[in-house]
Image (cartoon, each protein chain N blue to C red):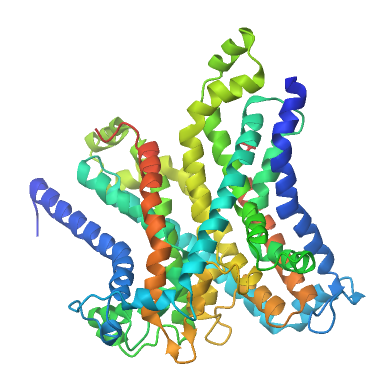
Length: 293
Length: 277
């Protein structure tokens, strides 16, 4: 057999599977989003309604517009927060030495923990009567003792973001530690000889060198934040009210509690488009000369 | 208050130590608390006490009616296992092809495969629900493996291509000039050196499908329910059974921690190669 055929043959199973698992469903979802299809009334799509579902979302459904805002708040907070948390961890632990490398072994654990388990557990930890987080926080900050963490909209969103940061920060820090340790030590040494304080050399030497890794971490995290579902479902249930109902969660509710397949697909599709636009903008900004390809 | 440089250094060292200690407590505390809760007797579960008689009652309870965590454990193992067994070899073949051969549209194709990772799962799961309903694949291992491949494949292709890219191509060329066929080269030269990469990719894929919640929540009902979904069934009418969740959680965590040891070795070594010693 010649390479000419082999190279396609080797690729074929993967391309077929990717098509069957993503491309085809994506097209299918696109078609459904133009249909009126309520599963509670009919086993098959009833009508072709063109853009009605999208029209309804943007002009006739405050809950959808709310979910759009919630999504943007969550993505901004959790992407920014997780990268900052990761940077903080990296700065603490990017040192040579046995103690540090043992401490670094812990960093993979939060990421390996199932988000579903994390959501259920953190919900218990935040319970005002018997939660460990609540108990610790009330001791540290007595003026917050009366707060029902998941019962007020501001705090629920805060905890949604913090939960996500706990999962991702340590993982992103592993990427950043790699970047930090690869900064040549004589660059830092030179800055010190020139009389730069740790603070100035962080801003003038470390941060610029780390920028490419930070940028990648940020893009990666933004994409995953858009897709996040588990924490909303298990930690806050979208509440209180609709204050943490992200687009993913709202599409899920429309699809699997209201059984409105057409409308749910339309919402999911808007989310996918939003993600495409945001990542396109990022790639433009970060890799201006097409370095990504 | 002026400090000498030496004193300053010492203060900074102490502050760093305290910060690291706080960090470790924040990261490990919640995990430890889940373990502790899982072995607490019911009377202590809703208290903050650290002193209690450890018991295995919670573990006994989750394996019995109506939770049957044993069956769910088997589902989780089988679905993640088959996903890895199918996904990784398929990804390896494609990754080799992407890495070694030149062809038209290769870049576009590779980027296209990666771009599928941008597609939110909620978009994919709606049509899958409708398709599986028609094909009678709802609530089956086959269906779950199929959809899990959508998370795992692009990632594994990307990871393995990166790995194969770092292997020098000279050996393969030498063997080819000696008359070996491409397939023999792949089997005898490429495969042996790729094993570590395959192993790491396999571990990541296992973690991803083991921890999947959204797909299992929507596409399983009774028979093929996986461990993460069981967690939501403990919100019962008699109240939330936190001690049972913690016991189930321990089962979700254990294999993850065992294998994340290897992942961490790969990562930390990859990231800090040669700098530790």
